[in-house]
Amino acid sequence: MAAVGLLYVGAVLFLNGAMLLGWVEARSAAPLNLFVGILQVVTPTYLIFTANADPAIILNASGLYLFGFTYLYVAWNLYANLDSTGVGYFSLFVAVAALAYSYLNFTRLGDTAFGVIWLYWAFLWFLFFLLLGRKIEGLTRYTGAVTAIEGWVTAAIPAYLLLTGVWMNNNTLVALVLAIFGVVVFTALLIPLRPGRTPTPTATAGTRADAGAV
Image (cartoon, rainbow, N blue to C red; front, side):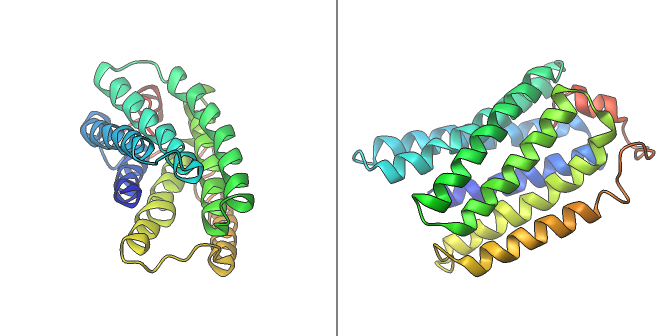
């Protein structure tokens, strides 16, 4: 069930990345954020209530709320045109929590690939903090590109592999490939999308950031 939710996290991350890049109008992204946010609150609640006190299941499910609340918060901001500061500082909380979940995947759960994926999410949510909480609008296009890529690499593709029974726990090779890919690609993106370059003409960075787009 969690894998189904992860698939749609991939969809909403890709959409929100496209929004930050100026490809999608901000308010048009609100419905999918709302739908996925609800899904990512209902899913962990069901998993926890049916876990029979299994600590591993409860631990895994607890992290899903971080995403669910983020997308609900974003949807609310987009519909109401609120300031983005609240989403930004909540994103800082998520980034710190993601580091803890990464450590637990490496040590307690034995899933090194998802240990790396949680590091991806920690980096992404820290970018959201800088963009939305600290208003560093020069990071808008870079954050959008990272968001769109992570939608596929950390969510949609792993979800598909989980749903088809291909995903393997403790897959050190996958973890290594993910780590190298993240460092190389996200560093390379700093060159064309570095802060200070002119944003795309379809929407201003300030409008998208103030809407709380993640």
